[in-house]
Image 1 (cartoon, rainbow, N blue to C red):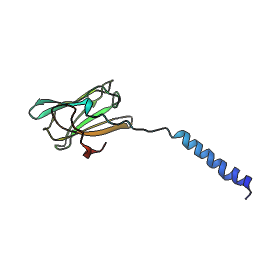
Image 2: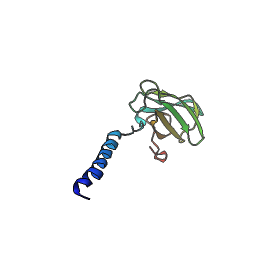
Image 3: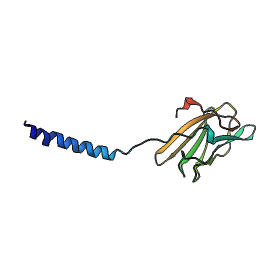
Image 4: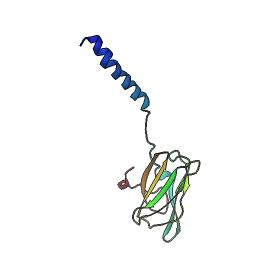
Length: 130
């Protein structure tokens, strides 16, 4: 096979395929989940808490938000506000338990875990993965 044939039959179609695949591959950089600085737990009574997320750029407006107590296998959920904020319904819990926050909209989202404590800026728990 001559050099010209190699270029026209192998290299050019391969280069065209590479260019098409490269052009279709849009960057997919997931947003990191919110950290403890915008999160707080509000104690409703002895055994019930609310999970609050302040306005942020991490959670998309209208995202489905789930708050799950992994120690008790109970969860609550809802829809994020237009500024990304969210206030859950009360859920059963006690300080020290692991609470997972997850959110998703149009297939994009994230999850992170916190150790339940009263007040703002709870400690993140790495056992859930981010």
